[in-house]
Structure formats: C-alpha cells, structure tokens
Length: 104
Image (cartoon, rainbow, N blue to C red; front, side):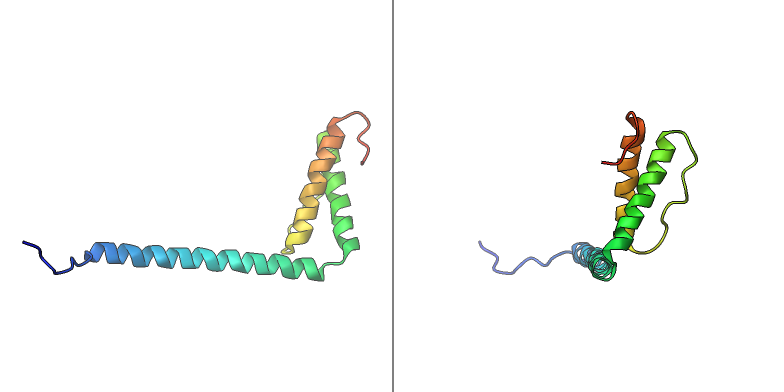
C-alpha cells in the first residue's frame, strides 16, 4: 500500500541547510567587497605611482637576493600598489640571483 504523505525533512538537515546558506552568503559578501575595493583602487591609482611602487619592490627584491638589507615593504591598503610591489620584488629577486642584476 502506498503512503501518499510526504516525508518531512529532519530538523537537523534544515538547520544544516540554513547554516550552509549563511556561511556561503558571508563568504560571498567578503569576496564581493574585496573585488569592489580592487576595482576602485585600480581606477583611482595613477600609473606613475604604480610604476614607482614596482620599482621600489624591484630594488628591495634585488637587494635581498644579493644579501643586502631590503627596504620596508609596502603595507598600505591599496591592493593595486601591493600587487605592483610584489611583482617588482619577484622580478628583482630573479634579477639579483642572475649575473648583473639588471632590470629587464
């Protein structure tokens, strides 16, 4: 004999769905906030400032690769400048490990 009644979803499953939904919502909000900040920083940061930060990172990376004391790293909130510094640091590190250490 068929039972036409629908089975109810257990309470713990409902709570799990709601907690998972809340967690995904919070993670999405943080990701969206980070993306909006990166776009805003990219639009408001002038190109010479980005180039200057790349050059500073390059020199710091090259100095560290050569065993010298590097300068202070960029610790601001601007994501574009932070990324430019990291790229310059990696390029400077590679250049410092090669002969001559010239910027490409």
